[in-house]
Length: 270
Image (tube, rainbow, N blue to C red; front, top):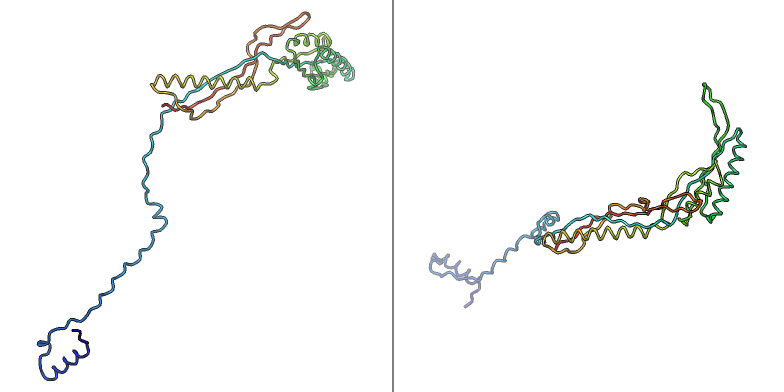
């Protein structure tokens, strides 16, 4: 039976007024007790960004690096020259500057006419320098003017290598004692194909070495990891292979033009 709190409290007060020990005779009544609210946990402040970032993350196991072999390959390629570059000119001396220039002009005109007669095109002839220099005699102390020297030099490109000797002979015959030949250089007009062949040879050499090392190690050659060109030699004349000359021509030896390449290659070993 449900009893309200108020009648019970009134009965207790009445018994006390009569001198009756009410608390001893009246059984304690169980009053409904509301359950105490559960204490909520205090909110936890988020960890600082620095703490979150510094916490070590589980790292996967590192894969073992594959074995590699590093080799150097060298290669070269050669070809006969198809062009000759001739540096030639004239040089004259006279008492006066005008006389020296006049003599130089006559010798230069003769040289050019002879070169053109050998089939050299105008686009392959150009003047490198023209000089007029006073000449002095330093004997006996103070310099003494003795005359003038006039000179002119040309670069002549001979595209028919077999005619190089004839061109040289024509220059000396036309200009006489005034003729000067400074140098003759043989070359290839387009060095790119020759250089490409040298690189191919260097690459093949590197791969052959790598295959040998793999075989000696009991492994198989794997994929190419890296390849770098260490050096590339521009095509240049090699040792003379023989002479080219004809009747009334200056003997010349064109030889061969050689290009070189060096590469470093890294291969995996399976």
